Length: 627
Image (cartoon, rainbow, N blue to C red; front, side, top):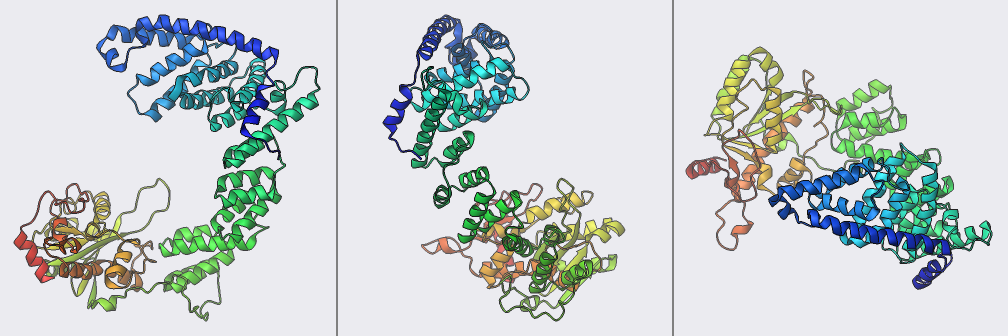
């Protein structure tokens, strides 16, 4: 590109104001002076009153509204400066938020442009853009507002003569802005050129004398625009520069420009530039992203521009990375859908399930897609999920009891009522359909030190709802049993949604949400277990089908582990608790202040803040000692 200094650019623009321009400017200045006189007349009718004054003087408020309504309903004899002044009055006197007012006024301007602005809507907007700098802080916002409104207007209504005239005027406006005669933001410049579809020929008309040829005027316009773009590149305004290169179809820049944008981390500008330049430049961009290990960006470009055949390995590598993340979150159904039936990706998903120890998922995928040869496959030494997980036998759990009939329910309740501390958790089948209702809570796990009871809520609610309600109320509403949960607010909402007819889920006593006691580590309960107990939880079965009966052995162990691990975490909390006195008090865990005894409307207490209703201190100490 050509080089030039900033001052030279301004002089370069200034020398091309023709005699025709000066005549138009003189006429516009006369109109501007007339508009100022009209505003002075309007001022006596209350337009200059501030909002506080207008509320006190209802008659003047009405006059202001009448003036605005009349001006906006017929723009035939309303000048741009009056229009903008009234628009500002509407904005400053409003009480809504700025974004809401912006959208409302944008729609208002769109409607106003249908009311015969002279000499035409597009030309009227250009004249407004010339006036707007005198409105100071409102200039930038109002510029975006009226240009956006015009863009919307032009999609439905066009005036050929007005559009052609406005194109030329927009070319002159561009010269005036670049030349420093008007102060408008770079983004406004781009929007003006796009909305009015300004070409080099429109700019060239005002840069050379009429006696010169069209070719020379176009060359001069191109040279001027290139110089301006070069200045934008020097100031690192890459997105604006790329938008102008695209607008004027200038393709002189190449790979070095692309690499500069990537180096400056202006990736959106780089993507836009490569897309404008075509497939060859897009391939260069993808390869550069690969070399810089920006695989997600490479994949997005490949997918958006149908470059899968050119980069098959990258496509699969990025897909596999996405599948791995979904597997780690336990979103196996989503991961399966993401494969789109691709055999290579399905086989990778089977390997992930094998690494996670999810044997039933391996069998399910192999059976559904006729995948063979996995039974004798040796698991790689480096695990794909790279985690050591906590096992149930490490927590000395003696028995997992499935509860799905009335006698088992009563026996479980009797045992649980004799405990001082319990761990609670729930599971339900995930629903991946956007906008659909969540599934019912399927099971509820209640764990003591040595035993975990898993209640089949679906079956018990169908068979013995009254007994279920009574038994769970005795447990959940008991003030003598400390119940431990993790993010239990979510579980309670889901329980209430699933079983709204039961009273047992409407009120809880003595609940401690372990999540609130700690600064939540990354990874939820698994991350907290890893922090406290040295190993995390295998969450690969979290989103499995919890409505299938019977549940698999692995599902039962997963469900039991989620409940009983809370008791072991609590033991650690209790052993590190003491009153926050002295210099060491700030390092101790004050878990007692997080116990909630009223759960009608569950809200997370703020760190260190006590709940509204506290159990007696002696009662809390009893639970702490028994834990």
